[in-house]
Image 1 (spheres, rainbow, N blue to C red):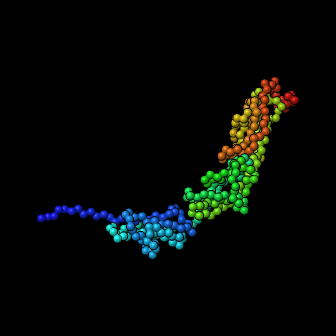
Image 2 (tube, rainbow, N blue to C red):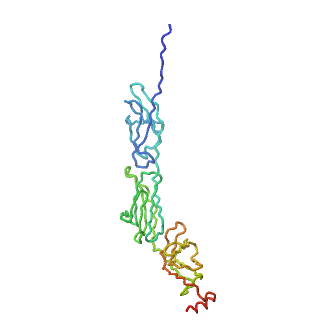
Image 3 (tube, rainbow, N blue to C red):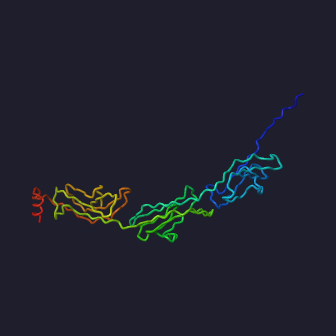
Length: 298
């Protein structure tokens, strides 16, 4: 007679997997730990590099030094109990990366006294970097103070002064791995006084009467790519790239002006001198020529 049926179950052999620590870009001089993970227990571990079995201790982890032992690594396991072996793991490629170079950017530069200056250091996309800042040819580490602070990739100079001028560098470090980037190219910070704005009234009559037209002119020495902003009693009333503000008819007010950088709207110049404009009632001389008017007013 036929026997009872017996179900036969075939289970795939376990597959080994390999991982490396530290992860991410690896640099010359570092030591890397490889770990072979396999289900079950009591395995004897075998390591392969570039498809060659390595005569190294058969442990779960192995340590390699870079760059001498870079390559493609695989691991597998054997044991006396079932299952007696594993599939070979997928390849893990250990590549030695060139040390990255730090990049330093400074905004704004040149800066005006009193402005906030931000120095940003970047080393690739690895978030594990910490940064050291240097100033002047001695490569002296920048000391922190109430005006000098660091946050992440940024070194901030508040209320910039002429003493902050100089040559700056930065360098990235991964302290846990004793890795330092190539130091950045130097960048010179220039801090200068804000240009002076001078406000004049045209025509500069001793008295201005209702209905007349006057022009305020804002002259700024050393200004580049700026807009002129005119203020009446502290409120902005006119902004233009030309330095003149024509007021028709003339209006009472305490007028000042200053320049703004066109690119970012930051304060460019010092605030000018103030001109008090007081408009009187209509004059009986309103219809006369300018010379007659000035002579009559005098």
